[in-house]
Length: 186
Image (cartoon, rainbow, N blue to C red):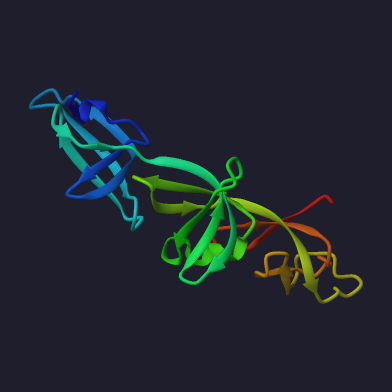
């Protein structure tokens, strides 16, 4: 069965000129004059580039199936990172280029997208909670966000935390920029 622009939905994956694009937003438009069309905002699955694209209504499209699986980052192995499927315990190699700086949050559950068994992208949750393994003690009386100090978390990543954070504290970290966002109760 042929698919057309009328079948576009948020999350659909389109094959345009051999590249995979995810539909982030779409709108079917029927102007008072002229033919109907579909206005979309799409994101390139590999590069992350976001563009606005308009298609004629009823135009034939090539839709692709992308398998999204939650995997846990385990360790680095040469030019790859190894992820584990926590349901089957299969280990899956993902090229370092797809992971980038996200590797500093090993042990974190990630959403990995696959197309025909090939990993396409790795997305972390918005934040993670990790334990501080090393930091200098804060000075007595430093109980505000007036200053920061370096701290190492259980994954080995180094972040900046407020002066009142101590070793053993569990902190919430923004995975986009690695910034401290709050302290969790132990």
